[in-house]
Image (tube, rainbow, N blue to C red; front, side, top):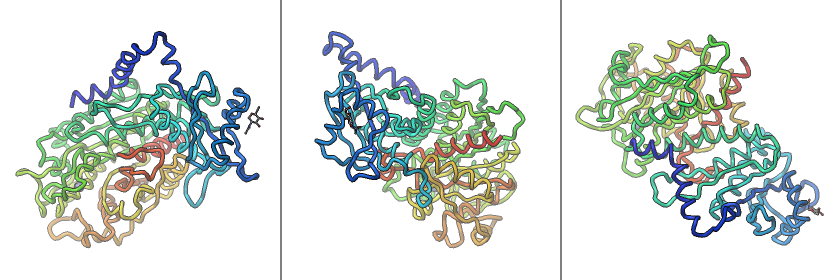
Amino acid sequence: MTFLVTMLLVGRTVQTAVRRNLCRPFSASKNYLHERKGLVLGVFEDEGEEGRLHLTEAAAHFNQSVSGRLSELLQISGPKLKKGKSRIFYGIHKDFPCVAVVGLGKNDAGVCGAENWDTSKESIRQGMAAGCQLLQELELNTVEVDGCGDAQSAAEGATLGLFHFDQLKSKKKTKVSLQLHGSADAEGWEKGITYAEGQNLARLLMEAPANHMTPTAFANIIEEKLAPHAQRVTINKRPQNWIKEQQMGAFLSVSKGSEEPPVFLELHYNGSPDGKQPPLLLVGKGITFDSGGISLKPSPSMDAMRADMGGAATVCASIVTAAALKLPVNIIGLAPLCENMPSGKATKPGDVVTAKNGKTIQVDNTDAEGRLILADALCYGHSFNPRAIVNVATLTGAMDVALGSAATGVFTNSNWLWEQLHKASVVTGDRVWRMPLFQHYTKQVTDSQLADLNNIGKYSRSGGACTAAAFLREFVTAPHWAHLDIAGVMSNKDEIPYLRKGMSGRPTRTLVEFAASLAHDG
Ligand SMILES: *[C@@H]1O[C@H](CO)[C@@H](O)[C@H](O)[C@H]1NC(C)=O
Ligand SMILES: [Zn+2]
């Protein structure tokens, strides 16, 4: 695991060095590298005249600089360029031997009430991702990207689109360095890069195999990522004996089946200029591998359970991003990290364990372990008097059945918190959808033969995402709490066009945007 950590950190340098060596025989001068530069430009669909293209400002400027060759070539290659479709033109500009032109759809689409996102921003993310991926396939080292009038979205699309987890492969995709084309909105561009790098960090943590991404390795990587922000950040990697002292019996009951020691990771980001401001508390489920325990999962797709720490990954990546953005807000992050494994020491169905707040839990299904580790983390988190609590977890398969990968399910006792999260998600396009916290579900988890609570609902499969949320609520007394079930959005096949296949790192950007909005609210 140390090997991986090192590799992740130095990967860029090593790759660059290798590439330079490989290039040397082919090029007498630096010219060869210089020539491997690409450009991605956007084109809108014109509202009025059928088939007429409407170039972005940068594309129009480029068209001028090549005496109209760009619009000529676009006409020749077919006058229409539908949203997400692209063309590559070779040799039309001396600085850019390869130019990818991507369709962005209608210019003034804006926020769509039915879709709950900003269609323009999504189109720009999608378009710039597609263009950058094409140029990456051509093994270009440097790509300049059209800001498309929204440099943040362009940077997000480009950075998210290029991410690919190949740290453990000998053959790697070309490392592309991105630059904003022209000088428009450099600040928005940088912000977009930071947001997307945050999500990419979460993707990396989730995608990495469980034998590399152990609780200890996870905590070490987050520590290293936060090292540049040491002035505003404190990190505690709480070991097993601390967890015992804290009487986190529910968390311990999950971790004890594994040989891998648990870690309770605690991050404090102090960004508020007024140090006394109550913190935002983020809590992430950190099961680095979920076999199901004695209630063993079926073998097919069990490998995906390396990403069962997606809550911890998105929460910690959000805090790394908040620190990079220097958001003027205080955030505390908690991540109970452990494996859920079957063994002679593992918790058995029907066992009763005691959580930190004294409530007893009958564990009828050892695969419903996320709610157990979160229960103790939520109890502990209340001691910081947070202004809001948001916990994030790949909690239930039922969440995936309900909404699929379209949106994160939000269960909350606070309309204010719902509105903040929803507003943030419209901006990022990484959507949320409100789910119920009815007493109806509470009754189904408080009906236990042996204990105060049962860790699965009375009618097991029915409303599984909702009974899990009702269970967590038993460990919450704060007025502004939200539980985000991210099981449905954990991985991407091809649903989100600007993310390649793999673990998604969702909804990191929504969490960051939400934290940023709290900062502005003061
Ligand atoms: C591209 O530039 C040429 C020459 O300056 C101009 O005639 C043409 O209208 C431009 N095309 C577009 C779509 O703006
Ligand atoms: Zn499980």
